Structure formats: structure tokens, C-alpha cells
Amino acid sequence: MTSAGMVPSKAYHVTVGIVGAGAIALGAAALIESTGRRAILWSPSGEGTRSLASGEPLVATGAVEGEFRPGIASSAEDLARQSDVLMIAVPAYGHRSVMDAIAPHVHSGQTVLISSHASFGALYLSRRLAARGVIVPVVAWGTTVTTGRRPGPAEVSVNTVRSKVDCCTVPATRGAGGLAVCRAVFGDRFVERDGLLAIALSNLNPQNHLGIALGNMTRMEHGEHWGQGLNVTPNVGRLLEALDRERLSIAEALGLSVRTIFDHFHLSFHVPVDSVSAMNQQMHREGRGGVGPATADSRYVTEDVPYGLVATVELGRMTGRPAVLHDAGVQIFSAMYGRDFRSENDLLATLDLDVMSLDALQTLSREGYGAQSDAER
Image 1: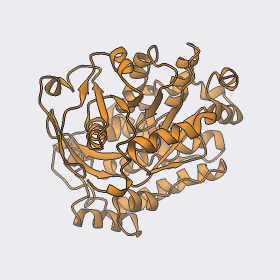
Image 2: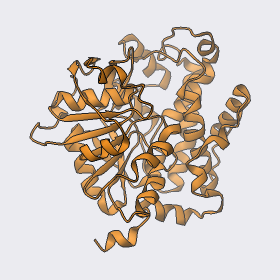
Image 3: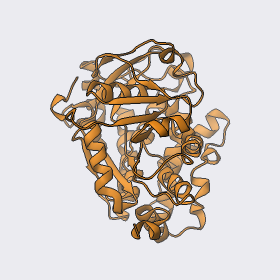
Image 4: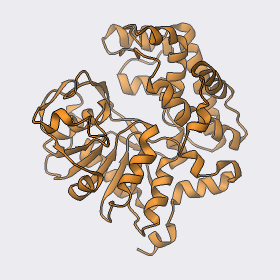
């Protein structure tokens, strides 16, 4: 496994219950099990863990290698009952439904990790828990610990284990505990950022996938096998850099320091800092450029447009720093797909951002719901 020096000691005994069974969930399970800890998977549909439940081992290759036998939970209640830490690792369009499923069963003493966070989902979960009088650390990650793909029902190919992952905890008063859990389970790779707004602006996948998908849409529609890094050509790279400037401008308006796109590729894929296109070409030459989506029905669009781009557009509006290119991406993809991606976000709709002040959002992002009862604990 790469980054061996960053793997935590086996002395920390913990069971991590993972909601999901896709490439990110399986990669996390393999990483957890490789350090001697216990991972339990729950697939909301049941389909994703069918092979593992029948006795097949989880076979991991790449940055994490080995055969593992994570546990399989039969329900959200079963998962919560067996776990010290809960980790949400499903696409953003599934966050609300799985949060609704686990919220009745989360109990004091647990920690919830969102891998990765989108559209202020931590606030939605915070509100669901506060309604029960439960306050726990909800840790929002700016990206995932692992990247990869799922070649088969019981296989995961881990492309990389990231050396740095931005995170924050809601409520902020539980930040030390949330950070400690992340580091104890996954190693010293977490960087605490200044609250949920910083994390909302730390996930570069939506902006990057906008440029990559827009520049390679016909490849996706034709189901071609194409190298993603290779096809971040100079023109696509310049678009990604322009999108990044919009995101950084919003962060600046909020007084926040967030990672640049150059930092992202350097720290995630271990290539020297250069133009975005040049860094991706280097990733391709080293065999770590990844493979682009072979279908238009890809999370690059169906997840990242409504749950990533739309959220950035909203923050741009609230800060007076319009994200013009992000907004254009939402409109272009909506036209391409014949869908209203802006209306598909079922998390932002619960927050009423159109009538919320920026100050109110900043306070809520720090304190979450139930802040008064937490202060009394």
C-alpha cells in the first residue's frame, strides 16, 4: 500500500460502518481492513453487497492490495448498531435518502463521516439528528480518501490514496474529536479547514468534471475507452483553470483559504506543479491518469452538476462573486440532457438559501442545529 508511513497504528480498535458499496466505499473498506480494523458495508439496495454477502472476498488491487472480508449489514439500523464510526460513501444524489435512513439510529458517542461532502448535506443531517436531541460530530470531507473503480461485484481497483484530505466538523465545538477520529482510522492525512463553507469550496471534482465531460462528451456517449488525463488537453486545462479562479474568488470573498487546482493535482496524484494540462499529461504517462466515463449517465454530470456546480453558483450569488462559468455549465448540461439539473438538488432545497442571509448561513455552518443543547453538554 502506498503512503505506508501515514497508516495508523493497529492499536486503535474501531469498527467503521460504511454506507454504500461502490468504488469509493469498497476502496475505503479495503484501506480500513488493511490496517487491522473492521469495516462493515451496507448497500441500501442490497445489490452492491450481494457477492460479498455470499462469501466472496473483496479483492483490492493498486494502491491497496489484498483480499479482505468486510462485514455486511442487513439494514441501516444493523449498521449503526455494530459501528463506532459511520461513513457515508454514496453519490451525492443518494445522500438525503441514506441520511434519512441512518438518522433514527445514530447515537451519542458515534462519529459520522461524509465522503465526500456536497450541498451542505452535513446541515441536513445535523437537523435530522437535532430533532432527536442527538449531537454528534458530523465530519465533512472535501474529497475522498481513495480514488478508483469497481471492475467487478467483489473487486476494487484503488487508483490512489490521497496524501491530503480537507475536512471540518459540524458543530465546530466537536472539531478536535472529529479530526482525531479521521486520523486514527485513516492516518495523518487530514487538514482541518475553517468550517463547512471552506469544505463546500474545497471539492474540485464538480468544476473539473464539468470541463472534462464537456470536452469529451461524444466519447462518453459512444462508450469509448479513453484516457482522462490524456484528454485534459491545453484547451480543457485552461477551462479548468478559469473555473478554479471563480471558486477561489468566492473563497476570497468569504475570507477563506482553500486549495488551488494545482495543489489538488500535486497532492492527490503526486505530480510536479505545472499547468493543469501538463500535470494531467504527466499523470497519464505515469499510468495514473485514470479512464474517463464510458457513458453519458455518469456522476461527472448527474451528481456533480446538481450537487456541486449548483451549490457553487449559489455561494457565488450570496457573496456577490458570480460563478459565470459554473452557471453556464449547469445550463449547458441541462440543455444537453433535457433535464433541469438545478431543480434536482434535494439538499439545498431544504435550506431555503434564496431567503437566507450569508451571515445566517455562516453561523449555521459553524454551529449546526441544536447548538444550544450541545453547549450544555
